[in-house]
Length: 282
Length: 229
Image 1: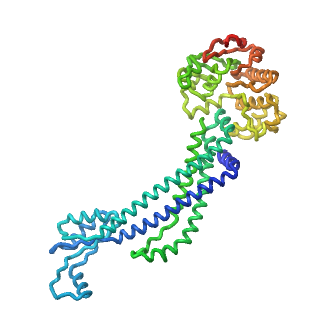
Image 2: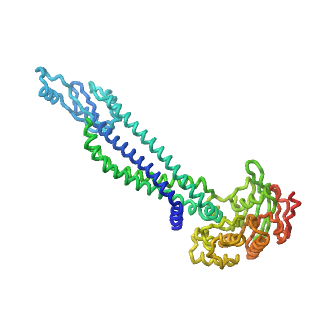
């Protein structure tokens, strides 16, 4: 209770600088949230494209497709193994094209769908090693490009998060340092008269956490507005031009908001704790 | 109550206190004298655990305070009253609130706060100025507020670091006499000072420091400036 009262006093005394910190933090968190949301959305789309990639495995003559399909379905990351009997493939070919009347030259085929794009090459290698398989075919270049793009997004997200966290920590650290400077005498008196460190540092940590909370709520509102405005355009117009199936790739804003809120409060409290530890010697 | 045994303290390899040993009993009143740089402030800081000795032990009330963990230091300081040269009052708080500040921070209930603050202000003869702000008080009165704040928690030991440094001679004498009265109530009082007239007027125990060493410790002593040269 006393700590809360001291926190309120600290916030009141900081005056306009509260808003400065909250504004800078809110901008940083909005950018971070925007990047996170975009990264997640793109990753989801890329991942959805990746799961649309499939490996076609052509079986040797005389091999029972059900048995091979059963073996392959045990592989990690394999989602579905679809059997295309050679009779079906031949009939389809005959109905689509004019082909000479000869005996069926096609092999039994398995279409292997995977849960993620990273697994395409690895699974293809494993399939090649099966003696029951004559030949496999898969879009190697597409798989590799999608993988590279996904990795780039992960690194970019990591770098942006790191840079914004560092900037935010600096802003909070400076503000709390100013608060400590302005309360130097009180802090010294409290420290020398045996008041517990929590009572001295607690209000500063809570002040930092409340900056983070307020900034996260503002950033969350911005992101919500932006999401509501942009989402229909992205889905109805932008993604509809792409040659892949993009249904089911909508990303909820809730996880991003939870991350922004947690990061804001953690960075706020953490920045204050670090600054208090640095400038208040008890 | 206060005991130092072979205490040595150095800063960056330079000795500030050299093998200091002394004992000050319960309710005793003593001056710690010496010129600037003699080691008075270092010794005081060791007593309230602002510093740790390079070697040796410091005991207060039978507890070796050099062995205290960081978390235990606040508990030690609650048993000490500290008076500062620059008073260290909060300008935006009334005299009453300045004295009550620490009690409230320690979670003492408001009825007890009122009782203890009024009692402390009565001891320093400032009961009628409880709703004034520090800027409206003279230097001597501000220092009396500092003393009231130091004794409000009933500490067995009172440490005063140059308490008369910012005061005129007459006010200085009144402040030291006030500290002596507090000592007579059973509190151990140690005053660090280089105010020769005050020390000589009081004729109390005088512990003299020179270049980090205790060069004399005399009951009913005086501050011998010549010996310091």
